[in-house]
Length: 280
Image (cartoon, rainbow, N blue to C red; front, side, top):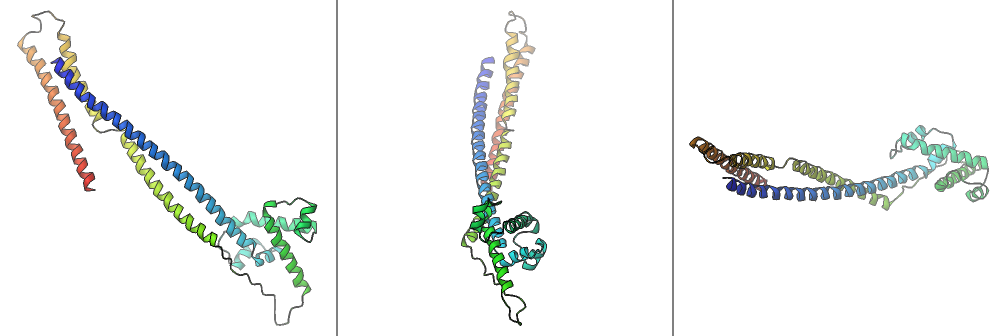
């Protein structure tokens, strides 16, 4: 009985060990897939951030290059009033505030220097915002236009000069917007894939039928090997009665029934899972 039980335990144990190794391999594959998905998400989110920055800078440039905005700045109008009058809705007032403050500081810097051109100003001093050189040019141009308006004589039928700002056509901006939409869709898909992989990885933490198999093997080892082996050291004639024999045989038969019941239930449930997956 001890030998037979050991053979059964070895067979079932080998099956469980192979199952555990298979689970570990599949788990490593899922973790590797998760790392790849996370790397893709980080890369695409980085691209989204760059595209958003480009679109923001493009909107900001459109605001600054508007001659009416520069004229409003020179006239001392508030940012809220300029945005309301120009109906500029690409960026909010809160988003524009720090940059409008830079425009005001650039204007004050130009007026304090009293230079006529940007080149003269750059030769005499270091610009406070060298990365915003185009803004200096826009303000210089606005000051020139303002001086020209003050020198000119307007017809009596014209209340004020007409400023026409042709719409900016930026094909690269349109391409960036398309790229942004595509990247956002791809990131959404990657997040869905990551959630699915995390769910699969969580299921690996509670492998089906492995713990049940270990309990079955533990029971078979105790009643089929450990307990019968304790009877071996006794001399002949001790524990040789019929009651002990049938008790030991009953334990042996019980662990065989438990083993095959476990195998039957496991195979049946695995088969039903396979049918569900195939049906889906």
